[in-house]
Image 1 (cartoon, rainbow, N blue to C red):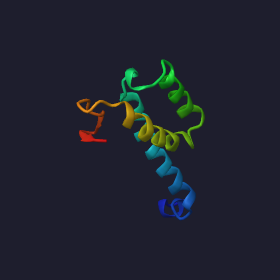
Image 2: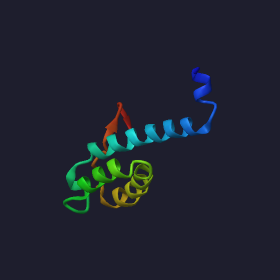
Image 3: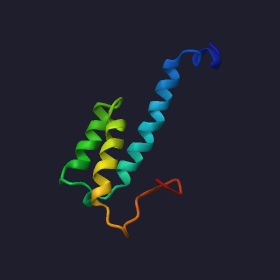
Image 4: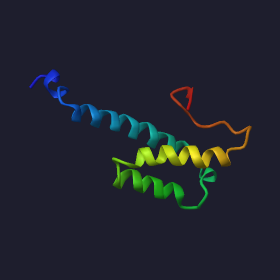
Length: 87
């Protein structure tokens, strides 16, 4: 089985894209401070969701991140940096 045969179907490509998004969003989650979450157990809840509902959670986290962090981050607080660049 050649690599070209593996990527001839859209399913492996889609799974690869989801894996990359999952890793990026999970890394962002782990870099957030506990004070940036509205509740005391929210970070734990997100980690659990990432592990149990791995297919949909990164996309839900993107929506949550835009809604909540935009309200809670003071002007002088920088967001976490991944790979030396702003997120």
